[in-house]
Length: 257
Image (cartoon, rainbow, N blue to C red; front, top):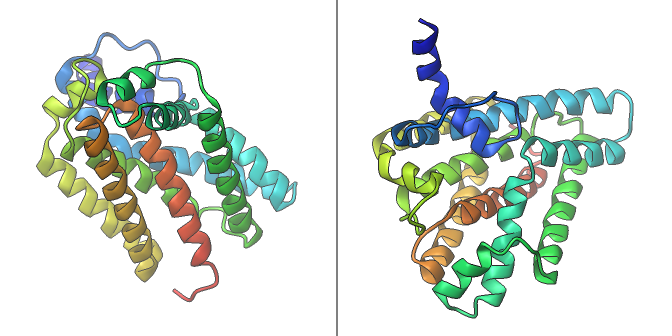
């Protein structure tokens, strides 16, 4: 009985392990089909992280001001994700700058564990913008509003894997691309959008537009440079779309529902 339950939740545990630093225990070597099924849980992982951060935001604002609360919240945000997506963004920043338009050189640089000055600058700018956006939301008492950035950024990564060839011959992304169900991805995307409409009403439209444009543009850059995607480019997409969605949410502050 317990074994059957574990088999049912294993794709979720894989998604949690792939997208966060939340403890999931020692997982046995997963089957490729379970890795493929884990893609369906990306938005749910985003929601889990968002709820944890929303509770923390409420607690922090009960003690501190919006600036310190935003700094602590962003630090915990990075901790919850294990800086995995930031690492992907740094790798991509260096690879795109140093790759000189070459697919092979770009892929090689993405595997380099060191970070150059361009990667550091990009990381600092993204984190600075995210901090400022979080502070603006908290200052307006929006302890939960930013949660949509986590959900839709991971939804965009799910769509990326479902619509884009995976470049490398091995890795989690390869299994995901082979065993994903495109119809399920489409259904989950629609359900996520409908649920978010209940909470945001028309304000969901700008969020979807910005997230969609971010996905389309970055996907275009990936196809143009390396003919597909990798785990690093998916991480970069998550970080950049989080930033873009946060900016969009701040822009909508004060607008009537």
